[in-house]
Image 1 (cartoon, rainbow, N blue to C red):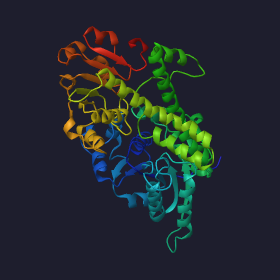
Image 2: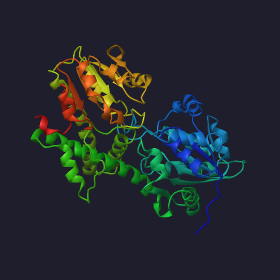
Image 3: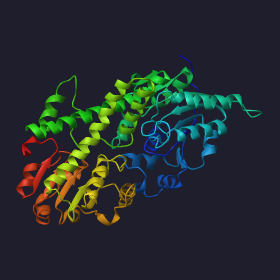
Image 4: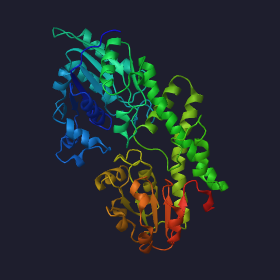
Length: 468
């Protein structure tokens, strides 16, 4: 086996949902490494360095305990990008890759401006030999762009000390809400690349806590495509079960019973078979759109159409739930108070990107409803930013930390995030202070129908055909 290149200093460009937690775990498991996480967003860096660990920019169970052990020991958060690049033996690119809003590929292709700018900064400020690792979710062949920029730096170094690079693809397979667990106990680690020495260098880092048989070397393009394909398959399962939930409501079947029956088939399995308001987060929609764009680019229209349907069903499910709410409330939401329980796109995270809760709330606000939001981790400021993204709704919504106060005088309560505390609501206490007739819309199927109806509240659950 070829020898690994010695790595002592690591730089990660991007202190977001991937870069921060990933580097924290590596620092915790590899005390011999010096890790610097850099970001141009000073506010984000300040939050990572906050003495109050509850103010970290990312909420993940177990994260603040790791930060407490590693920060300012062998893990540094800073905006001093150039010096960190210059000192690094290995650099992770972990920046945002949103969908392009204009130009070629708008609405589907990834915007790679931050990947390109980060690569150019690496090309300008790196020294000696540097291993550059793609950590962001990227379109297939993005490594080629990175290599072209870095190769130009190798050739045009002038009179400076010669610099060389090798490029690896090491996609993340993290689920928000369980990111630390996923990092500590991964199903697999993919390392795509052409340099065996560089692959072994990254492999040796992961071997500190991951069994070697779970560390899989591939070529660059297989590694990049594996990430997109994995997210597409997971999102497809969510859209599939949500499509069946609508059929359950129409026929009198129960989606929970159908999901159990399907999941017991070992060829299918039970994961990602919970009906709900659709998938959210930063990855699924973006990655599928990217996949659709790539398929069309390579002339695979039928393949593109197949994957695009996953997104169409996801959007349809959210609009379907919204229409059910309007219908059950006599077709009129004007001056009606509706309590939204859960704003994050899933439990155990404070991430609201592409959250079904935000999408459905905007539709309800457009109907004239007055909304009250509650979420254990999402702040009022974040909700305000999300709602004002397109239309100012400030006069039609409020935020309440106390669930009982949030539900007081409500015509309806909608559970949109599966937070554990929502499973233990005192419905007897809630029912006394709600308007009548009152409704609970359980889009996550986490509540007890009999307990809610026992207290005089009408119940609707996604995929529950009994209600018809």
